[in-house]
Length: 132
Image (cartoon, rainbow, N blue to C red; front, side, top):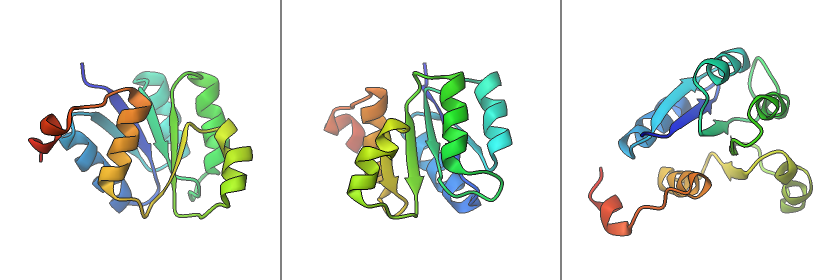
């Protein structure tokens, strides 16, 4: 069974890149650009992992993450953002709300490595090398 990842970002390019790359790695991806759409997916097709931006036009990412966690408290949430945080702020504040924090400047390979860690999906290096 494919694991389902919900990507929430108001930038179409980010949604597209993550959807395509994660899809190539064997995940089923739903990508949305608004908090309202994210909550709709959450209710109709619960994901195994949520990847969310922090700053979006229609909502505050942390408020949205709190709403997501109320619905599905055990689903890991990766915060993927262009906002740089002091490591102390991440450890003391964000770590209580999210499972992982990554910069949008991270490579797609670094992101998928973290996705696999959060989902417990470590593939042997040889199997991964065979995939595009």
